[in-house]
Length: 495
Image (cartoon, rainbow, N blue to C red):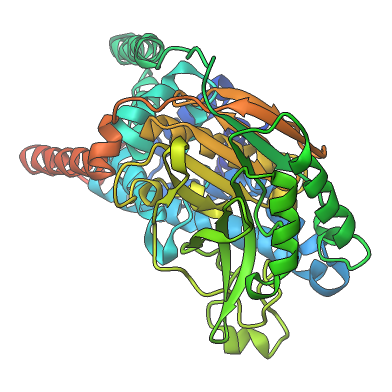
């Protein structure tokens, strides 16, 4: 029986992963979540609950993040051997956080609600500890539905707590007397669905709005830095830039220019000539005093750099190596940087001025994954602007999950997002997370698309994660107070 229970936990984790892009089977995923909490409720000890959480998490992360092997396949001869270790290590490592939540939660309370609170707290902590990795949060299961609009109110971590609480209420249904919990959860989902439809910003009339040109060169990662292909990809972007009629802004993707900024003068002049007076935002690497930066710059009509932003939230093991000297002994360097020392982090979130279009919060690749970083702008911008190179993550789940998280950041902030990706998916996203226009994965091209207006500041943009954190503190205090007044015999089976 123990073997079947553990196998069931792994399988349920895999099914729960189907709630993430590109599958988006949210109802099936929620069913798996209910099944997991039912298993956890029947756990005979904290240790058993911890094993259940770890096995479920391993199944979930292994399937939902299988794209993590793609960067190692770019140079398979040198790094391909690391791919299985990366997948297994990431899945099993992240699952340890869930195991801890289940173990602690089971010790706090013999039912499910201790686990629910600890799990939600661990998911919040996952966004912060060791630089953070909030990819595939539990609450993202609602992304394809109107319920996702509640991100603008309670944020991603509030959504996780709410999702787990609703699933726990359904998992409580074991007798006719407890059916009321399931009905309450169903009623809650209906209210959330209806409320999400109501609070969603209306579809905007975009006539007369500024036009932004999204440039997608579609440079596969194994060719992107190949000397034989560099001119082709650069010229492709220049050709797209020169097309008529001229837009109000042109955006190239991350590391779109093959030169370091100090050596890129001739290339920038070519870009400015093609743009014919239209400002251009592009990604480029730069070096300063022996340090390398992954940067975004804005060119004025003469090709001069008008705005500069250095990426500040770098990808561990991709753009920099923790314990770099140790890994260098084994010739293991950051995958996404050509500089052996890796990139240096910029000073932090900062706005760039796009003239008549307003101000933008620049986000380079991975930075759009962090709700707290997007919420950390010094003042509220008029738009979010993400440039990225998702060629690292293949042509399936990775880029699509990245796009979903960009959509959720737009909802949370009530801001439009300009998103330009090397191989896709480039898109204009409105403040409700709707895609106004997009260039599909794996296709070279450009798209002229109107920029939606921003909405009024959302509650989440004002409070950040404090609302979810406060709810967790109050819930933990309530649970501990209840436990003190209603002591449970450890030998008593789960109630």
